[in-house]
Image (cartoon, rainbow, N blue to C red; front, side):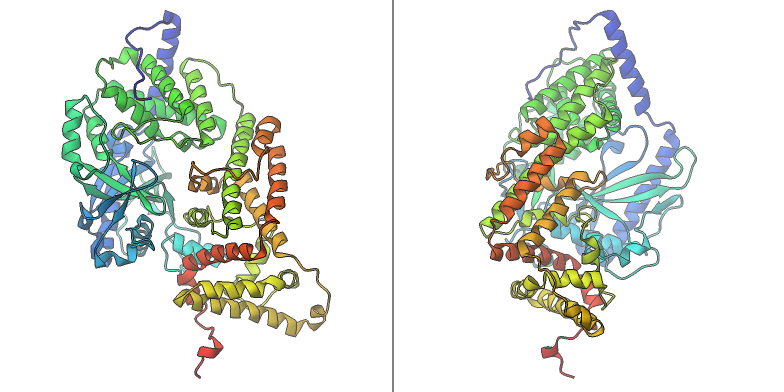
Length: 634
């Protein structure tokens, strides 16, 4: 991929065709520009003050998080397009600079694990003894959330909060943890957070000015740890540019959170400096590419992040580092065409190499979304050549649904394989409990879960009681296993929740004795598990607005297929997503009923254990009034 060459020096095109491409590039270049530079600059200044105020309050609460605000991302590279609606800041944790030891990671050359021998950070060490990006990010998010009431928000900005009613929702105990909230109810709502890649993201509204009034702005805060270049464990790529080599030696590299237990090696500060000295037409090409990508994605109804702008930047930089390329403005349209073709080659081959780490591939081999990326690139090429797009929105939706079926095959294949071998699919649950939109709210049985998990009530409706009696045959065994699994404070909370549930059941039976005498058809554990999984699949496949489809990224690409779902992929691509989904569910039921009951119970215990870990703080508040009989000394 890195050896591809631009053809901008020799243009084998007619003058009319070249004129069309030049006009198209100019049109998208104009669209990329801010319509009000002065107001965009004002927004930037206000946001920098806001983030600086947040970091000051964070440090007051926890001195370990003394940090330096590093301005990064497209705004500061001069490549932001259309509107000032996204700002990236790196939060360099000063006390950790060059401190944690870098350890190899099985995810490849672009990733590491960290080992830190310091009692100051004991709460961020995971079960395997590594310095955890997940635990560090959760601590930071909680500190930012706590700081919200004490920070001075600059005039013209308003921080988005969750709706106050969210604290009444069934999943609030989990949501509170994912939002970094203490769990206490607030009339003004909690600060709304999401995790996107390595960043913790919150949103603000711009209420000043006129050109961008009411603009919703996302603010990414990415924790980072700096290292000198000599600490790198893997070889650097050979960069023919002496200037780039000098920048590498001066800036070094840093690591940023990458998922649950690993860190990604980043050279964003090097890239920022390289871009600062690059030709104007180079940055103009980059901006045009991002705009065309956004236009195509919107017309297809797909998220623009499907084709990350970093792919374009990487290929552009690889060409910038290669001598002999001409970056004249009059050749811009052909440069863009050539670059798109290079990116297309990389996506087809499922390999786009990092500019700095020769063995780090930006693409995951066998990632089904590469097929969607290829569609986007094809449509981008058509637009740049002055042609009409060929994919309709309905065709694009069906294509995406087909890909989601294929992704669901991978997720379910992994989960059932784990359960059949007596293992827990914990990597899936770790991905589920990242953002509140990832949590799979049940559509068919949500009403039931809402009633039995309601921490503010000791009553059940008749419908919920009957449903509970249907599964009571395995509920007691489930709680026995759960209490054996959980230790310490988590065990105590699970015990209290069990008492609350039994209290609800007993209260109903005391008030409605006639109903307890009725014969109720029992639901087997296997049927209950299938009903839950069936609902889970529907949430994944059908919910257009959910971030749940990112769940497949938790499954390692080298996973060997069990063959459980053979034929589903072919059915989905040949006869449509609906037929593929039907076959998927048919096979899911077939193989789920093969799993021994004990293994299913273990899987359920693992899932609920993750819920209790995340719900701990709210459970402590809500269940404080419940006493455990054998511990009650009054």
